[in-house]
Image (cartoon, rainbow, N blue to C red):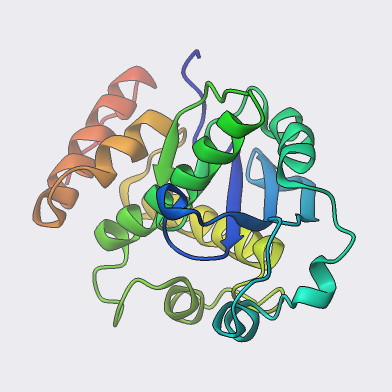
Length: 219
């Protein structure tokens, strides 16, 4: 994929029967929002029937009940529709290793593939919001004064709040470092460096951006 701005992405979230698809866990809900130039331009939310009853713990944790899943389409059917929704986009998720694990697993079962790249908003938040008490989504939403858009641990609400957190972090970088255009791959790189080096990385990023735009950037 060609280099994409960080504010043109699909932000996704899965609710599942457990932590590990390799041990039989399945997705029960997927939610996503599409961002274009930082604005939400599309939403996707579907429940899906995993083919077995979910535990009382998951019912309580997500608010998704076995009764709600009765009659819902199977995972393969939902994932076929979802893959079309996110096609051509890089994706963002909070604790992305979890969501990417289920995305890949459910797409594979549906004989589908995803070709974009994935960035973890939790890892980025550890570099941007180093003063936050912790980096759980609910904590960061409060810390960054982001409006709650629904119940936590429901896929669409979590995806939308993650999208607003993502844009809050991009906004902070723009305002603190004077960078007009931030690219997705730059935030992927930022997510992978030690948080003690985040300021150095962003300062260097600002200097490159300034030279490209013909500005004199000094810190």
